[in-house]
Amino acid sequence: MTNRYDTGMAVRRQVLGDAHVDRAEAAKTPLDGPFQEMITETAWGNLWANDRISRRERSMLTLALLAACGNFEEIPMHIRAATRTGASQEDIMEAFQHVAVYAGVPKANHAIKLAKQTWAELDAEKD
Image 1 (spheres, rainbow, N blue to C red):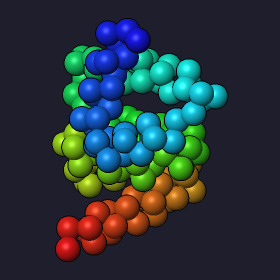
Image 2 (image 1 turned 180 degrees about the horizontal axis):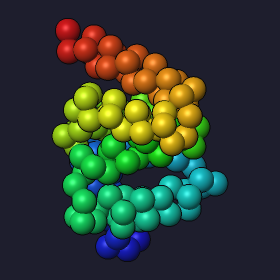
Image 3 (image 1 turned 90 degrees about the vertical axis):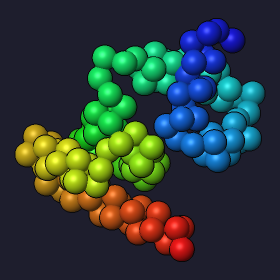
């Protein structure tokens, strides 16, 4: 493992939370292990570890890109992560408005639906 892997794992835990990362690590197999190492090094150890823009901004960019590309299965995870990066619900809704204009209203609409569901789950977990 490289230093970028260790940095990536630390950032991944900060952004996604220990419980999420522990579940993902427990589900890792020899078959997908190299893939998991690659995304930990590149996405988390290189991109998310970079401080040229804030993690709040990265959350907003990530959510907008996920919605624009139709990668909806990742949106709830990154909505939860946004609670750790400082991106507010209003910030995220602004990002989804950009999605509506530049990538399509149906994609933004679905992303907003997922965000609202996830925020409701987060609120219920507080109780």
